[in-house]
Image (spheres, rainbow, N blue to C red):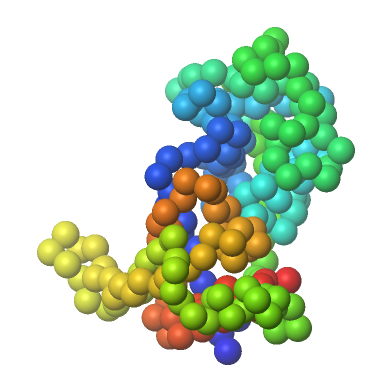
Length: 215
């Protein structure tokens, strides 16, 4: 079975309050930390920052953990609010905004002090010893009475006129009660559709990714 089959590209109706993203890095696993508040993305000041705070950021973004943190990932054109300063985490929080901080927009920093992180990367493997309970397993297998659709997209070797790869698409019926147990999907009550990009040879295994939770 393919151990590195799945590239999850999840799309939601709109970003949620307190969501994070990394920008300006050389890969998706590194960059300046930005947090969403009142519909605007803003940065985080390095004051009080340490590896516990970096760890919370990386785990919230579904990386295995944090490697390091640094300043100077910003550029001269960085603007917008600095949302967080003097962040203090225990390291066990699910979200960065669950840690203590001065208050939204309260800081004594400039954008030169914006903090960035470098997260660990690694493959996830299916552990078939961990699976859904009997009731949820039966619900999953029926593929009926679903309130959420997963659109699987697999790129082909063919290209469209604009040089974008053609996609083979399949829709899977899913249940929020089940996907809420799977942290990589970050399913919210208002989520109705999720798009997942998956390599074509791995598409037959996608149901097992949900049926048997990732360790």
